[in-house]
Length: 283
Image (tube, rainbow, N blue to C red; front, side, top):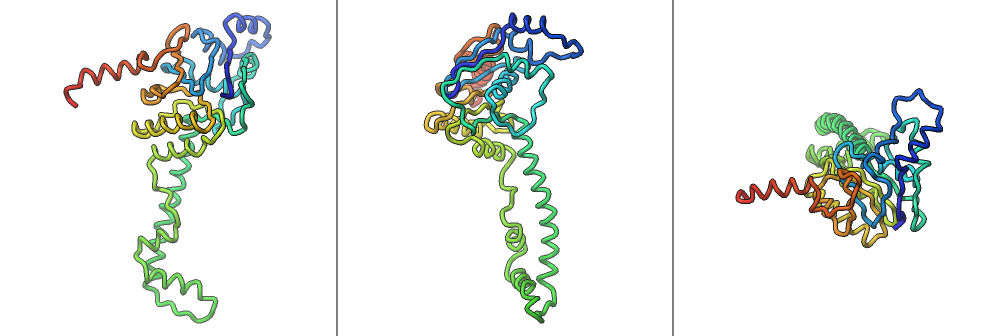
């Protein structure tokens, strides 16, 4: 445990702030009025704490505010409003221990950018592969003869081309082919690489891009990281797999005021349950 509690400004504090400001030329006061209208004033954390709620419930706003307040690292830029620093300053955090420098927030944008970078790299590999196909054929069937020591490297390449199949030649020249993982597997790899030991990790809808099977693997990875490797997690999710996480404390932001619920009581999970129950005879 690195963070015990986090307190957001209530409606009264927000009202006092607006009474005293002189800035009137802004159309948006985000993130003011987002969480206070849901009755979310204080979060009390466990090793794994989950924020559940539909679109517009404020769960991502809460995560980003917490991350900003504690100074968590992030890979993707976050578009802050003019009033964002004022709001964060009004929040209060109670720490149980020093927050490790490894702590970070991981958003869908981070994962998407990572997969996009891999795709771009793969496109470069595709282009290089086509060039190597041509080089293989030109080299294998060339009439090259070594005349001086300066031709030695070319001789090695000719011998390699003549002794290997086209696919083996290309693979050796490319070394490791990046295209060995699906988008979902790449996303899962991103989480595994970014989440280390002894850190506070804030995950915003980590189920995006993950298949149900990979969501279950991420579930086990998070449970083990919290139990054995000194990690604390604050997560927003709709995933029934992640919501079932052992020992997780779940805040339902669809309720007003926000309350703690069991995962089996959540509307999203109940919808899945009722659907499969109606179709039980088909399995």
